[in-house]
Length: 432
Ligand SMILES: Cc1ncc(COP(=O)(O)O)c(C=O)c1O
Image (tube, rainbow, N blue to C red; front, side):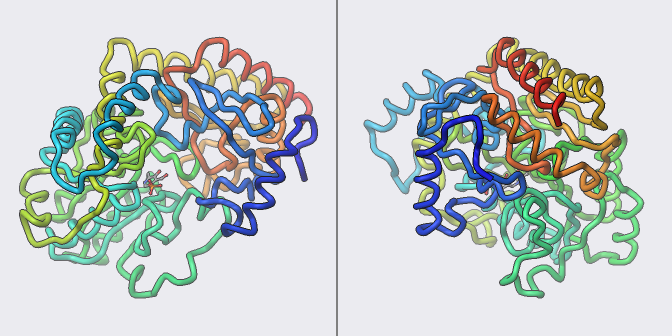
C-alpha cells in the first residue's frame, strides 16, 4: 500500500534507495511502518509541533522524535545555545562544566538521584543499571514486566515492548540463553505475580525494573498501589527498585513519574528529554550505590562520547525551558483536550476505544478496555489502528506507526493543532 491522497513521490524514491543500503531502510525498526502498512515518510525538517517531508507535506507531529522534543522541535533557545557550544568544538572526551550543570539539574529534579552518570542512549543507561543492580546486591536475577521496553540489550529482550512487540518478534535470535536466563517476567500491574517470583527465587533477585508509566506497549498507567507495592516488596527482600524513566523523565512531571506518584526507587534511568534531541542517556541513584561505578568503584562502564558538550548543552537549555512557570499545566491541559477528544469522537462514531493521558503522554487503544497490561493491549484492533494511522497521516497528522507506542505532545502544540487533529480524527473515524 502506498499513500493515496498525499503526494509522496520523493519519500518513496528515497526510501526505496534506503532499503538497499540499510536493513529495512531504517536506522531503527519502528520507523519502518511495518505494522501499519505503507511506506515511511522521509522527513526534511522539523519546527515547533510540525514536520515537513521531502515532498513538502506538513504534519502535526505527535511522535516528537520518540519523546525528546517536549519543548517543540528546533526551539530557538536550544538552537542558539547549540550554535554557541558548537563554536567551542563538538567533543572533549574530558571533563567539562556542562556535565556539572546538567548533573546538578537532574539531581535536583529527580528524587532518587544523589549522583548521576551520563551515557549516550537509553539502552546504554539500562544496560549499565542492570550491571550495577547485580553488583550492589551480589545477586543475578531481575524482574521485568511484559511489554516494557528497556532498550535492546540482550538481558532485556524478553517479552519486550516497542518494536519487539510491534513486529511480533518473540525474542531475538542471537541472544544467548544465558543472557536471559536470569530475566524473570511478570504481567504489569500484577503484584501477586511479583510476590510469587520473589517467593520462588528467595535471595536471588537483584531487583525489579519497570516503566513506571508504560509507553512501549501503548500507554498504560500503574494501578493505584502498584508502584507502592513494588517499593514494599523490594524493600522486604533486600532487592532494588529501578524506574526506567527514559520516556517518563521530565515528561510525566519535571521530576518524572517518581515525583508524580510519590514513590522513590533506588535507581533511575533517563534519556530522551534530558538530551534535548541529541543522543543522551543517564542513570543514577543514591550515593552508596553510585559510588560503585568506575573509577570511584569497581563496576566498569565507560563511553567515548559520554557527557558530550553539545548533548549537555541541549539538555541544560531544555530543562531550563521546562522550569518556567506553567509548563506542565499547559502540557496537561492540551494533552487532556486531545486525549479526551479522541476518546469522545471514537465513542460517538461507534468504535470501542479506551485511552487517556498523563501530562504530555497519551494513548488510544481500539478495545473497550480497560488496559492494565500487555495482554489487554494486544486485544486492541490492530487492523483498525493501521487504517486510523493511515487516515490521520493523509490528513496531516503524524502518529507513531504502532499501536504499541504512546503519543507525545509538546509546549509547541497549540489549541489550533489539537482542534485540527480532532477534526481529522472525526473524519477518519466516521469512515473506518
Ligand atoms: C522506557 C525506555 N527505556 C529505554 C529505551 C531505550 O532508549 P534508546 O532508544 O535511547 O536506546 C526506550 C526507548 O524508547 C524507552 O522508551
